Amino acid sequence: MSSSDRDRIVLAALVFAVLFSQVLLYPGVATLVQTLGADGATSAFAATALDASMWFLVAEFAAYVAFVGVWGLASDATGRRRPFIVAGALTGAVGYAALAAVPVFGAIPFAGVLLLRVFQGAMTIGAFSLTMTMLMDLEGGHGRNMGAAGIAIGLGAALGAPVGGQLTELAPVAPLLVAAALLVSVGALVSFVGERAPDERRTARALVEGVRRRPTLSIPYAFGFVDRLTAGFFALVGTLYFQEAFGLEAGTTGLMLACFFAPFALLQYPMGALSDRIGRTVPIVVGSVCYGAGILAVGAAPSVATAALAMVGVGVLGALVAPATMALVSDLAEDRERGLAMAGFNIAGSLGFIGGFLLGGTVAGRYGYELAFLVVGGLEIAIAVVTVPVFLRLSLGGPDRLQTGDGGDV
Image (tube, rainbow, N blue to C red; front, side, top):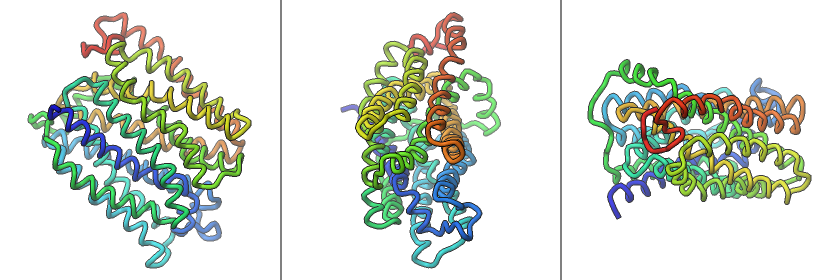
């Protein structure tokens, strides 16, 4: 096994650990926020369980948006990844542990809980984004590298949901404690991976200008935004929908989410390799249209069994889209700007998660779940339809990674 193959496995395992720790909280988020002090009688943030859960999730992703660019800039400017991953993982572990300690040492206002959540998110995103950037640094094809990242993300989400549901039934804060332990492991294991970041140091201003001169990066960013919006929608609204519509408990809800995340995870690597061969356009554009239609099918499913089958279909289609979108970021970014380019993608994705929480939670709370599924599925279809002329124009304009996937210039 080559050193690149070995490092690809280790880095994928670290991405898995960070995502697994994050998703552990989702199936029991309503129970967790109540344990942490979301009292509807006293908190403006927690008038209902849906409101409290929404703000608890939004706080983390708001921190992602605010701080992921700082981590990317620092890494690119210094030509180092590992020290920042260690720092982000260990301080993120402290954030999870501090949240778990809230019920032990006495309840604090829910606004204080949200501030702890922001701190935890600001630190955790450094470990996550820069570990993905280290995968971008590897040789072997961007589709393969991002497929490895995708399978790690998908497996982390697929396993985190059912395990998190079971942990919640043991104790509401158990997912927080397990998440803290996992991030400590990430900080320790990343030392076994070699640095491959370009060693040329550049100023933060030069890095930002370099990325800004590549407007085509807005294409994968836009798809990343909408794709993550759908994920945030399922994490919050989908969880509550399954529990209210079908009377599922937290553990069974986790299994329902796993119906999406299992095929989403297992097919990432082969789908990423496929996009290396056939290009990015078909997997991204056609896959997104079908993915949006699958979301509509989940909302229209009349029973648990049909909803589960629809979730499996959505997972397969998501696996087609996700690695090709991340690989497109690698295709378009300069080697010296990978940290910031991936940070931009994660900013778009984090904004998408926030949009999924806020848009999905607001529409579902005011107008019902049926319209919420219609809006979110329709957005996924719309982004694909709107960008078809852009893909065609770039493809007709010359050698194009969007069309060939061969690493040629756009």
